[in-house]
Amino acid sequence: MPLNTDEQRYQTLDGLRGVAAIAVMFGHFSQQRISILGHPVVPFTQSSLAVDLFFILSGFVLSHAYGARLADGLSFGGLMLRRVVRLYPMFLIGLTLGAAGLVAIAAPGRADLGAGDALASVWTNLFFLPYLAHDHMREATGGLLSSPIFPANPPAWSLFFEMVASAGLFWLIRLRGRGLAILAAVGWIGFVAAGFWIGLDGDKTGFNPSIGWSLDSFLGGFFRVAYGFALGMLIHRWRATIEQALRPRLPRILLDPWILYAIALASLVNPFAARGVLTAPTLLVVMPMLVALATMCRPSGRGVTRISLLLGSLSYPLYCLHYPIGRLLGLGWPELAAHNAVFTGVAAAISIGAAYLAARFIDEPAQRAISRMRAARAAGQPSSIDRISGHDPTRSGRAEHPSPRDTMRSRPPS
Image 1 (tube, helix red, strand yellow):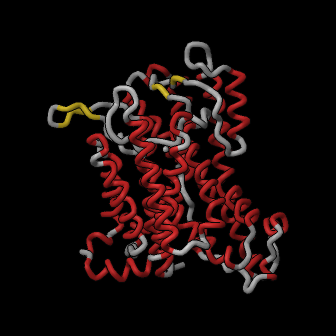
Image 2 (cartoon, rainbow, N blue to C red):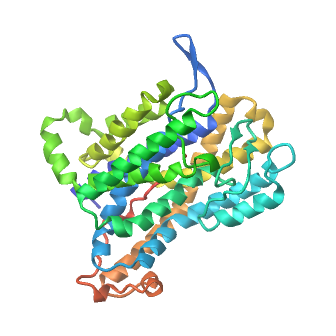
Image 3 (cartoon, one colour):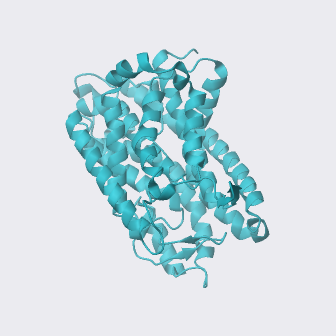
């Protein structure tokens, strides 16, 4: 069935999310140094910026998906229930896989995290809550993690902040553009301050954007998500004005999805942070500009449409599954982990394959079930979610009519 123009436009956001998830995966797996102009560097050291792209995408997508529903009377409980239903199945699978690896990681000599604390952390994380009561742990591949707040599956830290942002949406959607701009500015200032605080620790210097995932940087994560989420909401709020101002002045090449995917990948592969000199402009200009341009893209051709949809469907499962898979592979095959380039290729292939199977047989069927419930609501029949949350579309000014774009995922994930 042919897609309408609006559907096609937002497929590019799906593609961006998939590119970001792939970059996060390689950033976690790859420790291989290469030489550029005589300087040893590690590609994907900027891959943590993919999380900020996820937060911006979430602000845009959730504003689009839930703005009208909240105006029609969707309750706070109804909103949060929908977000849990959307995010929890893949999160739970990733946490379960991660728990198996965590038990081995918690063995003596690998971590200050004992078996009892490991189980306590899994129990806490099971409720989307951070675990803030342990010291440090060493990964199977030899890298040091300093107190991850989701020890079983460290990338899941961003899902906690995703839920915080989802809760905030209930009130933020009522703000005018100026209020959102102030929130984004305050978030940015706090984000930069926390990044410098972490970046100046020990022998490090400069701005380190990788905050929020560990015990020592946890509070900075609130500023980080506030910046990205509010900025995404602003882009959604002002999307027509942005398009009217930019489209006549932009070269057509910048509205090509392939070009946007290439820019996103190059920004995340970039091994040069220059102590934050390159990182800050990427966060402040490149990432929001990519999202704004992606909303103006209209993919032409079956090839780019299929790739964009595939990237979008893989993004969230890949984000949830890649780290536990890599950890288990490193624990079970330490000889492979000793050869990082080979390990990265094998772990990436297994992770992408697992993400595809999870998307096809778990994630997408779950979303179709949700879509059927939404269709029932559009017909004026309260769904099971409505009965649980207490929201009845027949009592609002109009029934909710599901948009194809409402099925877009919010994000994954570093």
